Length: 330
Ligand code: PMV
Image (cartoon, rainbow, N blue to C red; front, side):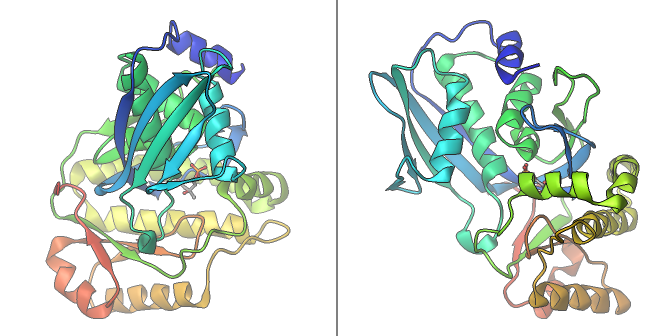
């Protein structure tokens, strides 16, 4: 199925109504999405599970103007349409443009501090879909919003929600059963700490990294089954507030994903020496009885997972850490 056919099943008509706005959080996967079974529809090989960080994310305002070109402003700066960022956004907006004479004016602000080293495509596409839903007055349910966000960036499917969410991989070729939904649990003591190593744009993006791993890595064959098992284990651990199980499973899941990247050819290694130094520090803290775990995405930065009782020990060990409490709104 093509993306345009999927969209026409979700949205009955594309009349222009008014300007719109949307806001969405960044999310950190505790059980990772790695591998696409359909690149056009961003259909994943495996399900994934994440936690959203409500005080970090994207706010987007948009307007649809007849007889104009797209104009995209990011953090107050107008961007040249030749930038890959704008090109990708405009190709996504093409799916919703009533006809080629319409241009979108998009004004997007990331509340992700650049220093946090977090990818903003998840919150970016989720905020954009919410702004489109507002502008076109689609009044879509969260399942449909999650599917549309997925078409922009896979992990954006999870940024429609606060708290924990699961993105079900789905089975069908239509992609209508591949969407995220919230795990309805509050865990006020749950903390995420951001440890920045490098915020430069990565040499290989997640789509290319996934494709190379799926195609070239023998170890990858074991990933889909393990990934699915980890989602179930973490979902259960959230339900039972079993922090040790959650932390061990999340850290092992991230290291397993990175193992498939390292074992592909040519190899992909996002880690830098400081990433490994931080891993050893985390393991040393655990030896001292502090329950802290890490996860890492397609980049060198670490995200620590711990409970609020250990904040003093964590801040003492890592000067530069930024601590987030996902269940405490600003
Ligand atoms: O949504 P994408 O295409 O940026 O891929 C995200 C991939 C990881 O961040 C590595 C894992 C995940 O589940 O977020």
